[in-house]
Image 1 (cartoon, rainbow, N blue to C red):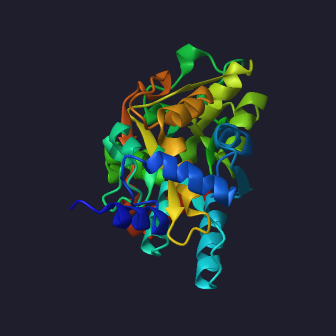
Image 2 (cartoon, rainbow, N blue to C red):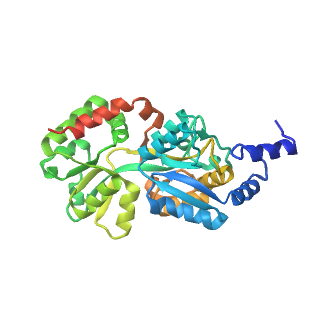
Image 3 (spheres, rainbow, N blue to C red):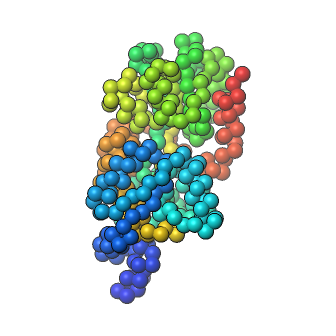
Length: 333
């Protein structure tokens, strides 16, 4: 349905996220400059998402006020504030399951962005209220000074070999990785394999993917099962003795961005959303070794076979996978 000029202008002002007119970008920029700032809640590393925020600020002259915490705390703060009638956040940028929960809380706003057409299908949610900006690809990583490449496991069963005793590590909260691995192995077989690994060699459990990756570099954990490949690639580029690899298809989880339904700086929020998923914003993420979802960006980090974990499935079956993960790794005897 075609809107009159007056109606289109009213829509653009009332809800810039839905406006699709040819002057969309000009209206967003003008509105964002009047607003002058936006509030971003994120679980990304400050220097990583900070690179995107800095480029956005330089391009549009709109300040990004960033608050960073773990994904669970980002979700908790956004929900708690909304339930209390405080609408201070404009954009949330965090892990897929938490983004999906914000959708279920009816806090997100669908955005009719022209950049959506450039994204891989897995980045688009059916409801359209958040979109995948990059993939967290789980990979195994090893210290290249302590582990020889020819000794690397070719299957998960190989991790039960005596050479790995006391050398394995895993992150404390990777139930979604387990779901992706078991999708390939089969649940019964997967449980048997990892019980055998834990019984034979033990697996050190650490909290935080960045910490786990750093422990690989230091040699405290010679071989880790669940690091993010972008972080291993970053440290490797800095000269650290680390390399990553995959067994089977690497498990990937989408991270996403959403404009909040009651965003106090709506034009700036939509403009930032557009920027992060645009070719320009995605190229910034790729330079920091993330796996972007924009098909226009070429990166070696997404050239491996991937198994994507659906955030909706992880929410609906969260208790099952969390319990299984804890039983296997957090309650080692």
